[in-house]
Image (cartoon, rainbow, N blue to C red; front, side, top):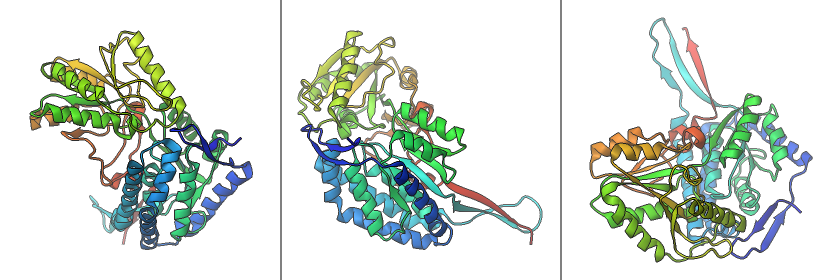
Length: 447
């Protein structure tokens, strides 16, 4: 049986299966992307590519309902949230289509001596491999595909095994938008086949969004074959509460940042770090909210819910205190809050990929920064303070790739996304997202 299957996590029903690619099909996908680069990347203009990517954005909007239904059945996301994901993805394609000319324009270099002039010209590098996750099946593809397609690179896309339908629907959008054959190729490849794809000299780079374990494997293979890669991995993002004039609002924001996408977001707030004078009131209010929380969407699979439950049980067994909204029911996992998690607890340095948060008491600002940075990860973070200078100071002190001050849900197409340490490297979105896989060619003209 193929590993590519739509298994509805709400019911456990296998809705649809897709055949895994043969070795010949994988080889054909790479060849198609490589061959397409000759025309797409080398002879088409930025304006021509941007026009087609703009049509990709339009088709995402037109087919948002169909894509949302696929996402819902593949990984359990509520239909409204799934449609929101698709529409945000359309905005990403639109953003790069509208700004491709600006982002890829020649950049003059000021010469310090000599005659003539010099410039930096951004050009494509060739066929790229994208390895995508299941938690945002359309948004993650957009972050990778949009900037690279307008640049002139071509794409071989391997999606998560549980998202084959949305993968096929997206491939159809690129085809129907008028992109040439091979500019975007979907392939239902196995992990072993993907290792060979990375090693193929026709592939010029690889982008992975996934787990730390997957990142270490892909990074090792890419490094061995001298291929650049972008890795967007896990996170244990801190929500640092230093002061507030609206505790209820801060608690609501914290809970929203933890339970968005049912807690299955690499940059969701996972560790609430609260200064001593606010801690008791924060925890009491948070417990009230959690106790009243209703069951939401399921996690992506029964296995995911079981794994999260095992993490919570181990944390409690090691001395943590749990307040929860109920009991697990299949793939539906209740919202939970863990307190009294000490550094020797196995949960202390773990990422909880589901609607479970940890709360830590900090003596003061310095202690809050220490706790926030006491993690091997470094993706995103949230800082709440009524003192702008304090907020800026703490934002600078956090060892992360992103900081949001006094607000959650502020992600936008123009804001770069990425982390440091075990959260990976490289950036997506914004002007930096188009810089990862380009040849920044220097041209010096003497006269």
